Image 1 (tube, rainbow over the protein chains, first blue to last red):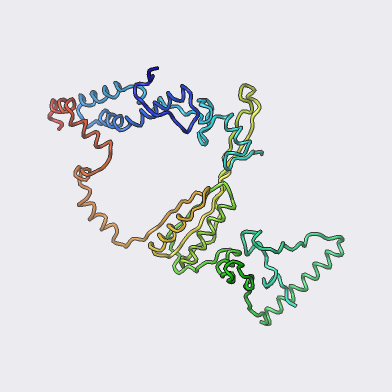
Image 2 (cartoon, helix red, strand yellow):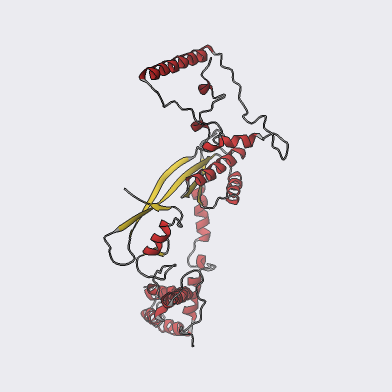
Length: 115
Length: 262
């Protein structure tokens, strides 16, 4: 079976893995790899001191980069279940995964609250 | 007879001396229970009389100062040596060196979910400061940070039924005064070496500059802050990439087409 992503990368070991988690992991790695180039091109495109043609060229290069190198493509996912919805960012856990662990006392400092 | 609790000779008032209750063997005295109002009245009168006697004795000046070393006679069965004084002192709140000028040099903030661990970390730092002769403040409480999490009870639907959780972040702070920066560095590195898991340590160190600081800064700026030379040896990956891009063929051609700008 061929590798379905354009660039090879390591499968994450710290989290639950499914196809969507893998896709997100790939985007995260690609964003990290291309972050410097993207920011450099963004600087060139937005610098008003530079000639318009240079700025346009930089903007064109930026938009011609693959979508998976963009930060906006990254979505936080639950480390335990891979869910993308209702992820509590303090714990990187989905609400149900968080609730189970919190009730079992597995998350440091978290207790039931009542007021 | 003098009031023994007041003299702190045999019955130590636990709360004021030690922060760790279980370390002192004797339980706290129980004065709460009374079977009748008469008994309470009698007890109150007796207490008042004792207080008066104590007051009088202090005014007459017949209080003898005899500090007691609680584990004086205790011997460590393995080393067959008496308990050292600094170990004995662990039963009490940390000692303080008096301030000389009151100039703050460092402030450590301890944060964590567990109060006991937090106190252990803070007292360790305070004791280390005492033995390094650094004047320190008392251990102060920081505001407790409470984060609330409300989640839906059910994994699917029934979103009206929620469950509340909270995470409490306790904090303590310790301020050091007057010490030289070398001693403060030694102190901080020692604390760092024996840092406790689950406690977050944050330190702010302050230094004092001489009055001609602004002049020295101006002098530095006149040589150091010349644009664009001051950016020459900068080690910023983005800046390096920008330079690389501008020197590439596509951008060079475009830059050469508009010579009035560059």
